[in-house]
Image (cartoon, rainbow over all chains, first blue to last red; front, top):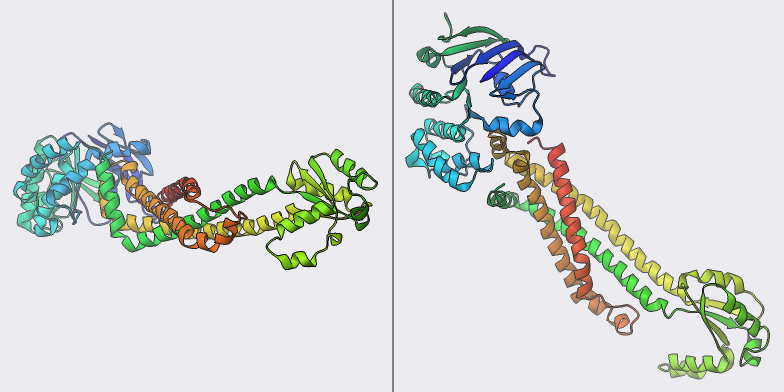
Length: 229
Length: 300
């Protein structure tokens, strides 16, 4: 589902590569933690998959997209098959929960009857069907992140990228979010989650890819965050 | 593309930025109003040329000697002059008016000023050969050929008087166009700035749109339409402004010359005639400015 082949990325403003000869393959439906300290290349990794950046060297594949080489006009297609969740939720403050989720479909031109059907479904999946008409500021952090996940998942993406989705949440709420992501993973969605959260990585016992200074220094099928850290 | 979505985005965009939007609309309106004014002057000049060029003549005034002695233009040098003029290329018709006929015409023209008529003796008026040209603007050929010839006192080209009037009007027109251009530049910068501000205030939305795979058109069209809508509102204001200027200013200020037929009246039909150009220019300029701004300054 995701394949990086000898990918390097050098930013113009930096002498050290953000990613240095990285090769990783992630299969369909896999749940992978991407860990490593700040500046280790996690964000660049995710941005390459979204074609927010183009690698300096190597190739990137997501599903059947040759991400680095595809034409610009096909980028929307790629992004429609990838869902994204962030640490800061990124909800639209002037729209209700349901409108926030619907927005993701409206802007890619989905017909109204489809939107009316799938938005309640996905809100039910994330457990917010009763709060569809609330504004984001009326929700707790965990609930806001659920809305963000609903928005990322509503178009049934093949891949879900989560960049520190629990970074702003307390441990209990984080656990709930992880349960939700796990449920989404079971639908066959590939999940790639960048995180600093030791306890979550340790408790989930999923595949762990660790980056350091732009290199993959560990790739364990059932890993923990780190020994002696 | 969902029209309702784009439309609501445009409305919120215009509302959110209301002060900038108003500034942009007003500047556009002023610029377009001046452009429209210039176009109206062009139209007026065209009309005047149509009216006058039928009537404009070159008058060849003959010397006192000819005026006094040659009533039918049968002697030299009058007869010679007349046939020479008739043979000059570009000459339409030639008529001869002797001193008495000129005096009659003079009396008619100035019947409102009897004291002037009292002062004027027929002897002070010259017999005249009136020449109508195919193209009144080509009078210089005639003047050059006959000026100073024997029997000719003076050649008077009514066209030069008229062209002086046209020069004034053309000057006003050029001035209007020049100010319109400067205003258009200001409008352009305002449009560009408004779009940038608009894009900045909506960066979260646009960021999400990009992320979920909205096409470039979907993300950018609201901004473009926003600019075009503002431009068109500006054009509407400009047309209304031209109408008001006509009703409350032009009509009264030019009432005299219009009534006596010197200047053709600007009517609403004229304004209606130039307004499509204003709308076209407004839509075109704001769309192009918007597009260029989005391409060059806004990373969407």
